[in-house]
Length: 224
Image (tube, rainbow, N blue to C red):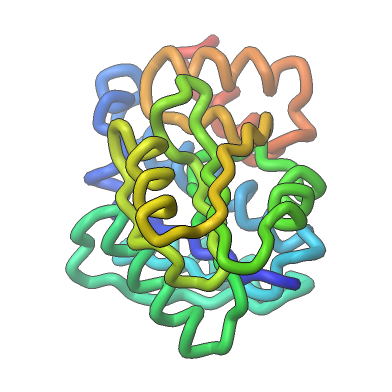
């Protein structure tokens, strides 16, 4: 079994609002681009991913995806989202595209978890059986940092606060097998200054885990 990875990306001006006061708009854009590049590189190295669909209305995110695509092991495509109506809506657009491409399963993945480890992603996908959903929580335990589904439209995505239990409940209502699977490299997404501090400390010790992100953080006065 292989899956299509779907990566929704907000317009940069609407993303990471809580970081603007800390790093400024240019720093936010540089960090967002770097994280996306590291995430896409990791996804394309996962053996159980057959293609990547980046859903975005942000031209800079599209450029990152298209620049990485030619050298990637698997196809990387951009699905434009001109309305930019939120993460769940973008994820749904990606699911529709995956179904049209004949995908057996999908992995809805964030663009702001640059520590993503390909073998860990493969292991999580390997635990995805027929008619099942795997919810990967954030480090706080209440949100959803990744949603793995087989079939592609097993449940409607509903990201945001409290989404872990929301996704679990939706799967149960449809009598699907559902598991909450903590994937360490998907636990930390970047939303707050505290998240940035944790990410900076991690990458100071292990910059190779997300080299572009490490370089972007090194240029931020806020974490020096």
